Length: 344
Image (cartoon, rainbow, N blue to C red; front, side, top):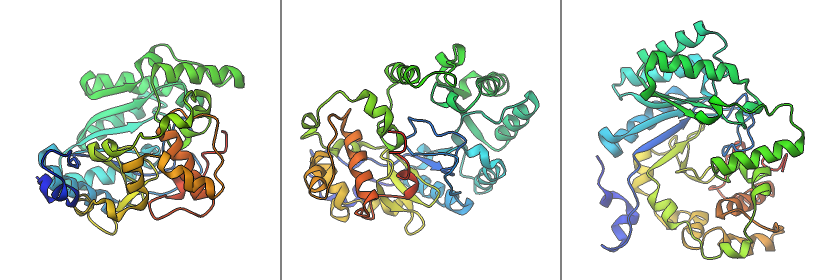
């Protein structure tokens, strides 16, 4: 396991100052492509998106996380919808087994593919053989705009039978037991359902969620966000997400690139994390998104009446930078930004 002192930031921090946490988990976004385009998706996934993480990239990142965190390393496979590429998903798990990297802690899916008991059982047993520890099934009003509830409920039922209840996570069981029929609702009714769902289970207002959902939920004026920096968010993140192109995002800060595993191993990205390497991250770290606002306004950014939180403001400013070709190497890729405004 890597020591905290091996990180550049930590080596310059005082004894009593908070340190940059060791990354112990990594979410591998096998693809941005998804059969859904959920309003709350913080990676802006949709049927129009692309990208497929090469097996070599996934295994390299997996190896690196083991170097960083040792036996505490946890990998989860997600997207997009990884089951759109069933054979590829198996190849990643098979390669991890050959390399003796341990089990995949979690695989996420919306369950669209479980159209029969036979298909569901075959795939669940295969995942079990290949070393999946847990399965996470997304069931909520946002997904049910695109995915019929019955395949998702079938998958949840059969996963519990085959894997055991302790290895199955349903997000959220409330909607598994009492599903919301959202497809036939009017726009006004759908918006009320969004608000109700966000109240039950708060969203992260990044990616597509910074569009329509954030507009519905915005309650705080932008002035109230002044002074809310992101220091604890970056220092305290215990994991990263890595997209199909190798881009590394700290925690759930989608669209803020802090490195690329295709150019540098993950353990080196962690070791070399230092604020002087990042212009945008440096500003967020010390001043928060409000620190980006003045310069963005001078470039033509139009403030909204209110922002839900600092993530909402940050995403909207970064979207503006991306749309106007003003982004730095820290703002990307296109898949994270291409349609956040489409329905906002």
